Image (cartoon, rainbow, N blue to C red; front, side, top):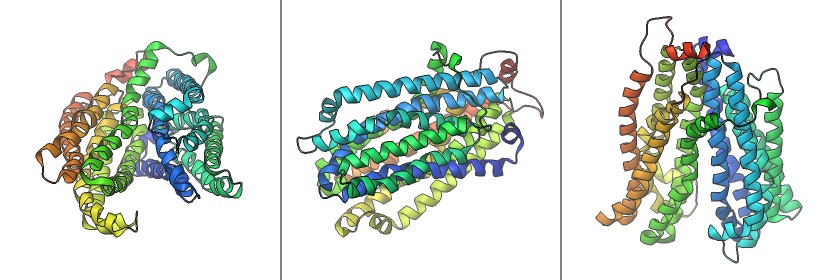
Length: 468
């Protein structure tokens, strides 16, 4: 695998790594939809679906915690592997595993002790609280398996095994699909059955990840003596993981902002349209994230090895791929908005409301690919502070404030709320791309053929890996 990341034909290598990573993102999205589809067909499906919606922000926080330590540690391990510092790469994995274990245990204990107050805080009513509590208490028993499998899966990808990494969510998704109807309907366990099926699926995914790390393929190994957290290393891991964790954890706040404003100005039908728009946006966004997750092992490894030319070429190819994908998706969605909206609902009134909103909402995705490439490159090269800043810039400084500002200056307030998305996407993309061009020139200077980055040489002599 070392020679493959360093020497294989780059377009072919990127394709072989990016396609499974893209599929994994889509599968993960499907994984989250499975329970909702089955639960919606229960006799008391409306209350149960509302309960699942109340639990989702908590599930999002759990996912963000796994990304904080998994996506934070994986690029650092990749850089160390490329620099030939295997012990350091293993120590990063071991520290990340310790953090994943600790956070999963704390989350599980917190949910079991404070389940009811948490759910009431997130909007549970007397009608939905029993359903939400049944689901969340059982779901919490699988948090350990979920966080370990998801967190360590990023390290599988950074070793270049994205096909194996794709199987982690795929196995869980298939098992969940099979077990849901058995537990929900055949055994008449209702929403508790959905939670039990999810925990079993997470446990099997956990076994799959464990199996990989016990196989000869694994280049990274968790070692018990290295699992004791080191403060400096923990800071580096958390700084790199902060940006993806922030992006995930703020989705709930973002959707709440949209729904509050749309309910105020457009009523329930506008909120229903937003649910469709958010789903479509995820279907566009996640494959672009997958493309760069395929590029990340190549970027991190070759940066550690001092091969700047290969890093720059990988960034260029990933950028072209994301832009091509976003261009095709944007054109199709703006050309056929009624057809796409109709895939989500048979209600023609809702389709008629959603279609023109979709044309406006999605147009900023044309440039969003460069935001993803730049932010994930900062992470892949160890500069987590920059990634976190631009993630906060798009959502915290632009999108959420604009959701509340734009309606003050427009007659059509529903479309003014929706306009916040493309405006923030375009502005953030232009700003991040402009800085990114400068960053790449400074971080990856052009060198004569065969020359190596001085940072990589320091690595091989025992120097510290630069982590931004």
